[in-house]
Image (tube, rainbow, N blue to C red):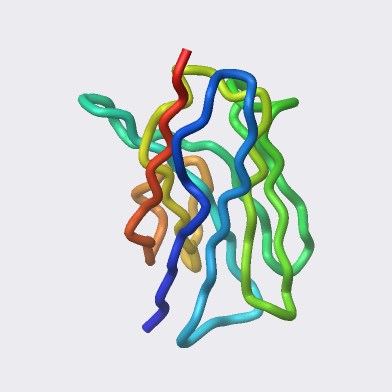
Amino acid sequence: QVQLVESGGGLVQAGGSLRLSCAASGRTFSSYTMGWFRQAPGKEREFVAAINWSSGTADGADSVKGRFTISRDNAKNTAALQVNNLKPEDTAVYYCALKFRWGTYTSPGNYDYWGQGTQVIVSS
């Protein structure tokens, strides 16, 4: 089993920044993808960013490129999502997830483990 715990969410004004963290524990493997997703009220869960744990190759959704940066710390088994220049439409619960299986990293259905989420609220 793998446990994921997010932290770092909160209330911030538009234009502000937050650093979201995801700590992984339990059974882990050397090759997997960690992704960040978000879900706003009444909307589907959407892809935000992902990083390959072994290579460090990262990608992000077009809506967050230039504002959000995903990174990982192999030694600490943690990943971070630096979110800058926040907009009210970024308000959502942010989840980290691990994917071991084959399949596109942008699809939430391809992830095996999920954290409980951390709330981000951006006021205008």
